[in-house]
Length: 91
Image (tube, rainbow, N blue to C red; front, side, top):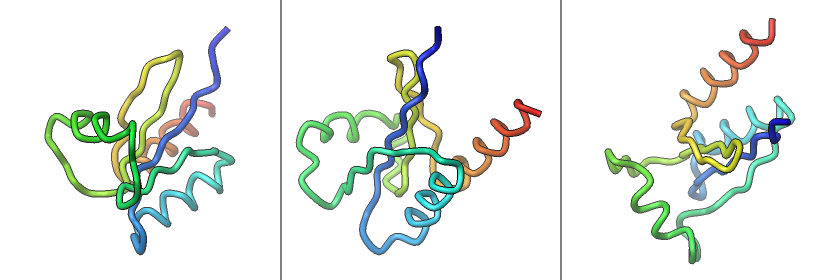
């Protein structure tokens, strides 16, 4: 039996792309754990610093965890494309 995927979004305040990604998630009934990288990121610091080999410093950055593995989806546009692809797979 496969686990339900979980989602993580890295955001900053006053970020319209972050707001759009969160709205897309809401429209698709996706719950996300949100981490504001401007705040106290504590144990996430090392993950955030080393999770992107290309060191992209933009937000949002959206990840999915499926069967205990974490995968980068990307930013808002990649997330929107990923959601569309997921819908196409179910038609």
